[in-house]
Length: 61
Image 1 (cartoon, rainbow, N blue to C red):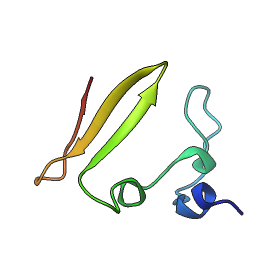
Image 2: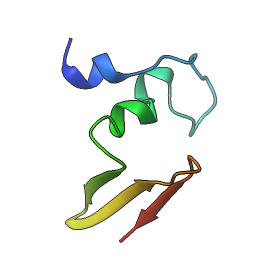
Image 3: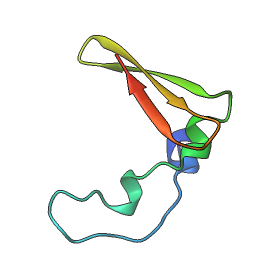
């Protein structure tokens, strides 16, 4: 099993179109285990996903 699969939290599977299966969900604690900012490369552009002290998420380009 690879590292990404180990980080998944399985919530339950979905059969509705457009809603990811539980295998596609990643617990936010796994994303933010090294700090409160995660850099994401999407289509050649860099974004930052930040967790606020109130537990909200903010995505910036």
